[in-house]
Each structure stands twice: as C-alpha cells, then as structure tokens.
Image 1 (tube, rainbow, N blue to C red):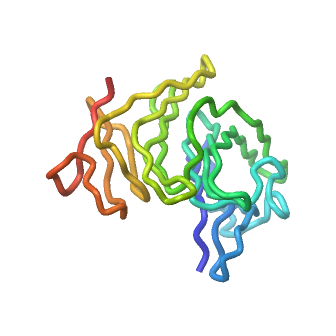
Image 2: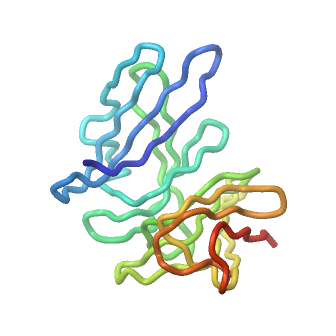
Image 3: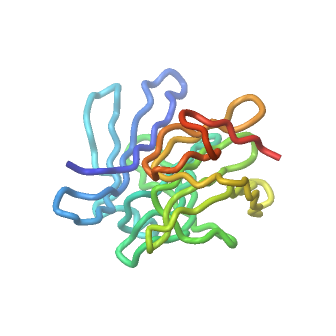
Amino acid sequence: MELEIQIVRRGERGDDGGREHHGGLAAGGEILGDLWAFDFGKNEWREVAPGGPALLGRRFGHTVAERDGTFYVFGGYSDAGPTSDFYSLQVANGTAAPVVQKLDSGAVEPRFAHSSFAEGDSVHVVGGNDDDNNQKGGLWSYNVLSGQWSSTQIQDSVVCEASAFPATGGIVVSGGSCGEALVPGELGTPLLHLP
C-alpha cells in the first residue's frame, strides 16, 4: 500500500481532465518522489517526471491546494524529516515536464499531516505535526498576489490528518486522528471562523 498526494485538475476546453500523484510512503517505508499523471480520456497512466520533479523531492504527508490551475505544495515529511518547503507546480497536458517554482515559506514551521486549501487569493495551511509528533495549531495564510504569509492563532485549533475546506463565514475541519477536538468539549465537525 502506498500513501500519496493526489492532484486533481478539472477538464479544460472539453477534455476529461486528469489526476496527478506525487510522492507517498511505500509499504516498506520508502519515501517516494515520483510524479504520475492519469488521463481520463485515454484511461491510462504515464510517468510525468521519472524519479519525480527534482525540486519537490521525496516526501509524504504533504498537501496540495489548487488555485487557477496552479498547484501549491506545502510541507510534508522528507528524508530529512518534517519540512516547510513551499512550491508552485504547473502540470501541462501532454508530455511537457511540470514547471516547479520554490516559494518562500515564511515563518511557517515545518510540519506534516496537515491540511491545506485555496480560497480567493490565498492558500491556507492548518494543523499538522512536527518532528516530535507535537501537534501544530493555528492557521497560516499565503497571499498568492503579494507573496506574503500571515498567521491567525485560533484557540485550540490543533488538528492533524484532517480535511479542511472553506465554507460561508469560516472553515470546516473534518476528521483527523490526533485525539483532540478543535473546540474543547465538542466532538464532530467544528467550524473555525476566519478573522
């Protein structure tokens, strides 16, 4: 069994779109770095970058958020441990190699098993674990227009291995396996409000 990041893009100009997979953790514990693409129209896989895009490296537990056709890859666990690496990735249709650009991760601490999503002009990162498996709190937001990070410390917002997505008036965080509720005394799906 392999754990891997799935990058899903919507179909453009009538095509069926595709799905890309980067990295993961193989059953034997090997950290992977390959990048594969599935073409729904042809019903076939192809290796986009043998061995993976050099800048992305081998990692698992990282996240990908898509905004206007650009994928933003953050953090994860690499051969050197948790990382705060931050990249933009553009995957072209056809046989072209992906375009990868390293971005500034600001003051965001290294983490893995976090969640991320894009909304408006921002990519948000919430939760995760550090190298000692301590849970990370707060919400970090990267403005893609200004290239600046900002932090919002939401009380008791510790979460890992969960899914987060925008909702009217806030953020819905669902699932997770850290054993702590995001809001003390609550179980289920909390709503974290953006300031």
